[in-house]
Image (tube, rainbow, N blue to C red):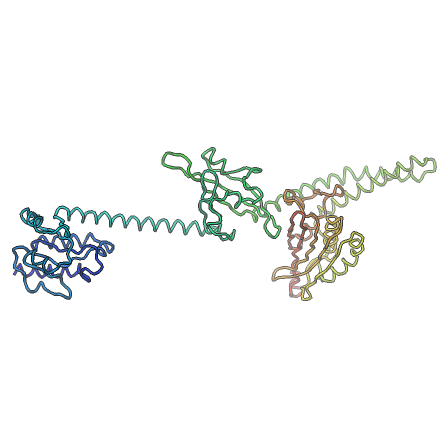
Length: 508
């Protein structure tokens, strides 16, 4: 009864190992052993094997030397056939090219060595156990590999989803790899970036060696410490972008730098807010200064002008003295104009806000400015959106902004050119645009053009663009500057549209 149970158990176990016999298998195996030895072998083999191993191995038959083979062990559809001796097994299965001896009996091993032809490999019990343990190690390696791949994929997913551009560099600053953000923003493939100097990607192609700026990669390689730097780039539309570049060293097992990670973060929005805050601080300082100047300078200036004017009218003054007094009066008036403009600039705009038809304002203003444009050989064109909404602003101040912008464009086109004044709108703003083909604004002074007292003309107080920015900002709008050196300048005034609400609701 026990032998029947053992043999039946053996048949059920081998059913798990047998599929398609030896079709496509590299090793066609016959196993030799008594029932307990075979059961132990099947259990170990089943537990330690994996799918890749089983693709190479096919067990086609088993021999039970000295045992009576029970008919119930035969099932040609699902079971591996068993034989009373290994010779019968080999005669019935000439395809066998490997024999595993599972009993460990020395006499049987000796007999097998004498009988088996060179084409059949004999694997003794000790060797079989050794290879089964190798299968266990292989299984552990596969598990480690799967875990490593999972970690690698998770890390790559995190890096690729970051908004910052990340480059993996060698010690010389050449690109080895990058995250998907770099590929998306540059529009280039990996093969186009690998091997390039990181400066060609993170700064400008005109300065690939980072020679004219602080190089954080070189600093990190030199010190072994993280580094950072600020850089700016003019994009394809002529807008200025600001970036901060961070570098981090990657060490080997000996503590030596073998790679560098460089990350570029877009700080344009933050820089814009900082510049607006700095401008507000400047305006506050200018306001205090203008109050002091009004009391301390205008009063004596008024006295000087009064006496000079009185002397000019005096008959006792000769012609040369009169000319000098006229110069004093002229310069006093110019200084008074500067003080008045300065005080007007620092005061909040008190002009009344009303409905402004931007198209009518542009047409009327450009009729006035057409003569200066013609005299300077500038072709002026207007392009108006007929479906434009009205703007909530003061018409005189917006007209002042437009005149200042047109004058600036004429200053930039001394030898003639083209001037376009246009109006458009979107869901948020009405846009008044002045675009010229002048010399453009150099990148190194782009940050200063809206600052008070900054001017490249060598005359005036430098309050024109600053005044425009102040007027538009006070009505809830914004000013956008787009310029490329030697290719012209475009200034866009984003003006808030007049909402369709009742007057009493608006006043509330």
